[in-house]
Image (cartoon, rainbow, N blue to C red; front, side, top):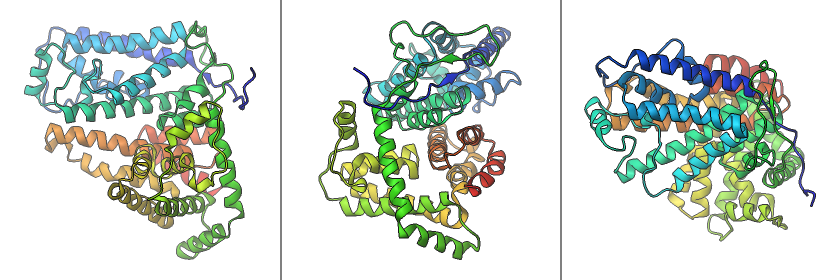
Length: 453
C-alpha cells in the first residue's frame, strides 16, 4: 500500500570519507598501542594524553563522547581489556558500514543508547573513560574481571544516561558531518538529539535490516552511499503542527508587540528568530501553567497513535502534548526540554517550576543579547568550572563532564532547531562549528546569518 505520508529527499552520505577517517584512527591507534606495549604503566590522575595525529581525528569522529579519552586510556595503560574494547568499537563501525550500510550503524548506536536507558544493570561495553577514576581506583578496576562495569546503582544510572546522550550526539554529528547538507539531514540530526524514532525513518532506505546497501569504499570523497527516499509519519505530523504554528505566529498581534519591545530595549531592529523565540516561550509557559492540573495523554502515547496511522484530531495546538514536547525541546534543548515535558506530564510541579524558571532565564538572554548568544551562555555555565577541573575529585569531575556534555547537547539542538531554515548548509556549518567547540568561529558565522533572516 502506498505511504500516506510525504516522501523525503534522500540523504547522501560520504561513506568513503567517513571510512577513510575511521581507518586512519585504527591505523594510528595500533601504531601507538604497539609503541607503548613495553612501557610501564605510569598513568597520572589526569589522563592528559594527546597525539598530534590521533587526537584531532578521534575528536572529529567521536568528539563529545567518551571514546577519544578511551582510545587515549588504552594507549597509555596498554591494558588488554581496554585495547580490545577500542578495537571492537572501531572494527564494528567499519564492518557494519561496509556490510550493511551507514544507516545500520547509526541505528545500532541508537538502539545501544535506548538499551542503556532501559537497563536495570550495568551494561557491558560502556567506554572505559565514561567515568573519571584516580590512578589507584583505575588500577583496581583494571584488575577486575569486567573493567568497565560499576556496582554503584547511582553511578550506573548516571553512566547509562550519559552513554545514551552521547550516542544521540554521535549520531547527530556524524549525520551532519558526512551527510547531504539538506533540510532532511538537519531535521534528522535534531530528532536524533531528541531520541525520536522519526530520525531512524528519515535515514532508513527500507533495506537496512535485510541485505543493506552496497557501500562505495574505493572512489573519491564525492562518492556517496545513497539512501532511498524515506517516509516518517512522526516527522510529517510534527511538520504539520509546526505549519499551523507558523500561520498563527504570522497572524498574531503579539508578534509585532514583541518586536517593538525588543527594538525599544536594544535600540536596533531584532531578528525574527529572536521574536519567534520569545513568542514561543511565552505561549509554552502559558500553556504549561494553564494545563498543569489537567489529565492529558502523554506525547509518547499520541506519537504511538501517529505511528499506527491514527492521528489525533480536534486538539488545540497549544494543548497538544506532542507539540508542547516539541516546543520544550526546541526552546530548552533536547535534555532540559525532555525533563520539562516529563515533569509536566507526570505532574511533578516543583521540578517543572524549575524548568520554567530556566526557560524564563533563556528568554531574558534572548531579549537582552539575541538568540545567537544563547548557546554560548548555556555552555558558558560549565566552561569556567572546567578551568578548575584538575583540582576536584574524580566523582565531581565525572559529574562535571556529564553536565557540560548535557549543556552542549542542549545548546546544539537549539541551534539546529531555532536558526533560520532557509539555508540548511549554513545551519549545518554553524552547528558543527559549535559541536567542535570553535566558539569564536561560531560567533563570527552565526550573528550575520541570524540578523539577515
